[in-house]
Image (cartoon, rainbow, N blue to C red; front, top):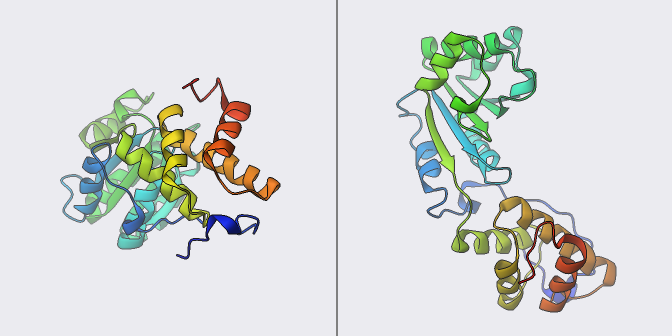
Length: 233
């Protein structure tokens, strides 16, 4: 990937996030989840659940696993019994954003059973652990209780710093260390906050045809996000 110099910020370049395995940043907050995904196909259970807050990297890891396993993909809210055989034809399935709205519990139960019968694998992404889902079907609850579950935690300083640098690099922007340090000490400790902040700073820099400096970052944080996402610092 070519990273544009900050003097070239006026160019409205398309934003394409990097999602390869080598682009995923690993720290204590997510190393257990990365290790669990990397252990495929030697999973201890056909079902692996990745649980974490929005923007924690669940979908990124799922994409990495899809590329490796050639898995099919379905949103939990779109899962149906009719689709189960087709989804499992590849031998691997990613179920995103479980449990979703109006989860078809019977369909998910059948999908898990089919994976068990055929030696298939299912990777599920979710905000919460399955034990916290409102599951009415006892057999499905039993299957989910047996699943391997790993959490992606809130980012530590090292990970959040790396995420900020990566988010700017995904937008082909090189940003100095003083800017990153200023943002890091004042922003909410979340991946979503990092994404929102980088997008807003990029938008302001393009609109003003300005370089991304500590002053510009401070202005965006104060105007757009405080006090909702950012402290007074």
